[in-house]
Length: 236
Image 1 (cartoon, rainbow, N blue to C red):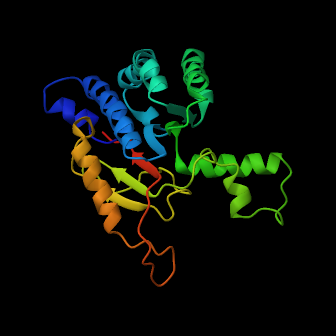
Image 2 (cartoon, rainbow, N blue to C red):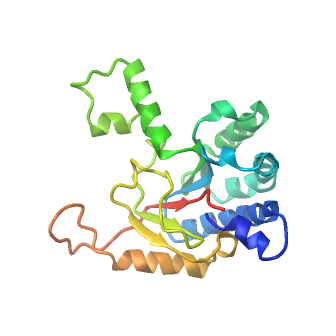
């Protein structure tokens, strides 16, 4: 979900207003995905590297999360969205952790679409924490394989993403879903995230449908089926 800050700058507004518009775009896109039968969406809301940003911006983002939960939670509950928060919760405030808990518990019964919000998340962090948890559980080197390690990953509740979208014109994955995106189809858009529309989503889905997904094999004539979308964020 890249480009919030640049969207605001072009309108001579503080970066915070771009992040606020970005939340509106997120809710709009999640519901559009649900309408198209996509069952999982994962978004990069705040990376473990974003703490390097100005204190005022980080504080504003934390407050925005609290406002977003208050503003949109009832709507998401009614639309069948299940919310999962993934990332290191130890560095955020108790107030924010409580808001996340409320969002998760209020939507736990929903099955239409699962929205995983990666907050204070990094792909390398995810792999390291999974290894640590496996070691703490006494998993031996002989027992450890991809399936076992995957069960300890922060997104073990979701299938690996079929489609990875990054907006804002940046062409990299920036430490997002390093383990899970091994065979994701990557789509990069010049669109700034606050302007991401249904048309942009459909263009990405059409591009995905044109891809030949071989997963290491020579050829596959099977049509592509999309169930899991990852939307990279954390850019300027």
